[in-house]
Image (cartoon, rainbow, N blue to C red; front, side, top):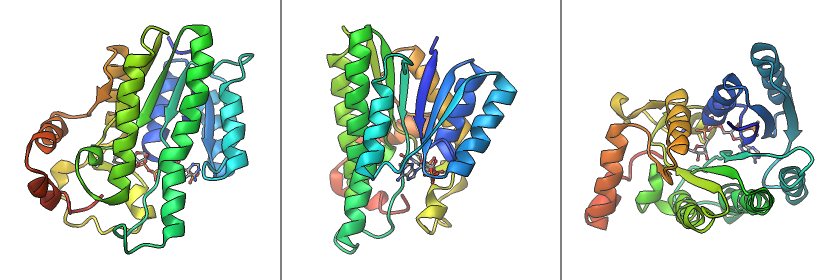
Length: 252
Ligand SMILES: NC(=O)c1ccc[n+]([C@@H]2O[C@H](COP(=O)([O-])OP(=O)(O)OC[C@H]3O[C@@H](n4cnc5c(N)ncnc54)[C@H](OP(=O)(O)O)[C@@H]3O)[C@@H](O)[C@H]2O)c1
């Protein structure tokens, strides 16, 4: 059983589901995000409902010194983190080439640089202990050519799959979680028009987090919640790229 998990982005959506599910299993938590008030409210709720220890670590993961503080918390062997959930994320609206390059930099920092630094810290700390697990929240978008967001998620899937093989002997399980459309604050925060996304394509954040934790227990390196997205992801990986790109133009 996981004794302590560090979850980035637990103030909303998929990260919130991970934090609540893990606390319900008796796992202590380190909660990392920018909104301190929401972090404190969540920590209080988890302590009260599940009797777990919940630490609050306010950090903007696109800020170098904040990111270093979170990495240092992961390598603090006096209070070991057994599971890292690299979940925090956001997307800018607009296709790459039409957006502000400074916004692209921030998106790259949040979706690639932050999980890279935290994964590096976790692999080093966990290798020393001979056990641990890392869940990297990517997306089914990783399997489709759809601009910078997809490219960042593809990078995360690729690194996770390699790390799963490379660190298995060190006792570390690494999973890339690839959800499809999930009802969270994600689309609202990027001001995306989601009116043309059919109802059947939506998942709940609880379903996504539950499927990921179940797949982690089974040692699966790739978790794609729901049968419909397993089928879509398989098609995306085998159909001609032009066809996949056309279908994938809709939404994020
Ligand atoms: N929703 C979907 O359809 C979907 C599909 C596939 C993959 N995903 C991925 O799932 C992950 C979680 O997204 P979600 O849908 O749950 O979104 P969400 O509801 O908007 O939650 C995003 C979380 O990330 C945190 N966050 C955002 N920017 C941050 C920053 N700079 N520093 C620290 N924390 C930050 C937010 O907290 P604060 O605002 O308090 O900082 C919040 O807790 C992301 O990696 C996303 O790419 C989402």
